[in-house]
Length: 482
Ligand code: 4AD
Ligand code: MG
Image (cartoon, rainbow, N blue to C red; front, side, top):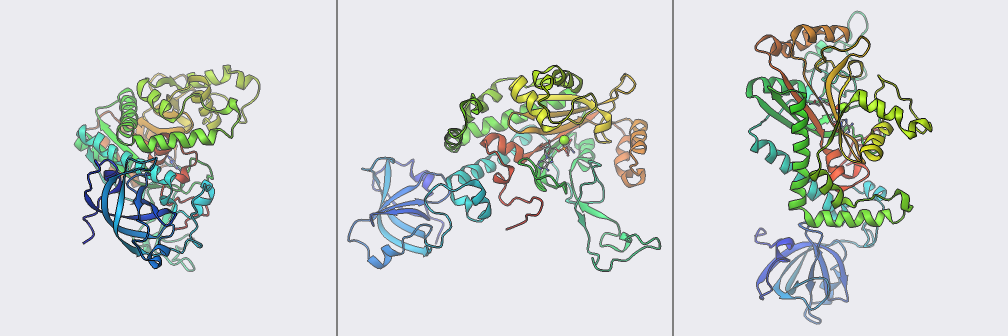
């Protein structure tokens, strides 16, 4: 029987009264043929297991190597050593799995994040990734808790779809047609009518369109699932496969939408601060160490926990796109020509512009609303009363310090005629989205929603600089190992 073990996290909280326990885990270090630092992943803190000298066979002791897995039965006693209050005095030690420590890639020393990415199958066994992935779990749990408490219905939207929700065309095709000799139509193009689904399909870029179908029946739904983008962006913020949370609310406008997004982000942070204090403290210290190698001027004013507390305590800034462009145009940064990309009304802001707004100008999260229609998706609600050439839509992006865009959302176009006009203008075939248009035909309502990039949220909370370090097995251009 294996499930009567005590987890190390719980054990370290116990009053040492000689209780008999069984623990299992992996050896981090073994000193003086006496002291095993054992880790079982429940916490970064190792359990000190003490092996009385002379009590155990040499043959057994030789097998206690870094990363070997052990089952230890013993008693919980007060520790005489520094660094821990309790330890386990071993009565019986069983090697569950040997490990050749010469060949084991993780040595008890500091490894670079780049190196650890190459051994992503083992990096969970480091303190940094232990903390990051326990926090990632906690955030995922808090997502469901938040929406459940609000009475939202969790809707599982499809992974395989025939529509391009974002209209950006950055999709992975799903097909069972033979690559070498696909069936062709008379004009030479591939005949997807012969394909598995009888039409061209792809991996979803967003569950939003189906989410809207749910919201116009349940009132409020959310999705939380994987989404896929074949954009060739090799940055520290982009993945080809990432997780997104997309709430969608009927009877909701842009302001309600922004309120919910702000409340949601603050709730997630608060949850982690309450439930993952130890892991956050580890990551705070990790960042401080990392910053020591930077010049004073580039170090952040706040540490990780202060930054999170600040975001929880302060309202987000809210400005329109037009105001954001004005701020950029007036900035000393612009006047000194320090932006690589030009600034003018109508541009799709580059990350340098977004980061200037949040990191230099406001120094807090910013909700930017009412973007130019020309740079946004077809489903966004057209603002009324715009000046010609200055047409905007009820869009919102939330920009976070150190991350840039963390949320993208909008109020949706609920007026059938306006939606159809926009689709025509953007060459989106109406017949493919007949089901979407039906929601506007049968009891249309004002509604809105947004998408929170889950990995970007994990980055924000953990302070990890590269998105590849907050998802277990990152999928990026030219990389799908593990
Ligand atoms: O702004 P996006 O493209 O919005 C949508 O997909 C809408 N359908 C959401 C909605 O209104 N329901 O993506 C939403 C968020 C971004 O703000 C960003 O945080 C994240 O998803 N995101 C990515 N994260 C990692 N890698 C990528 N390639 C991402 N693309 C978007
Ligand atoms: Mg976006």
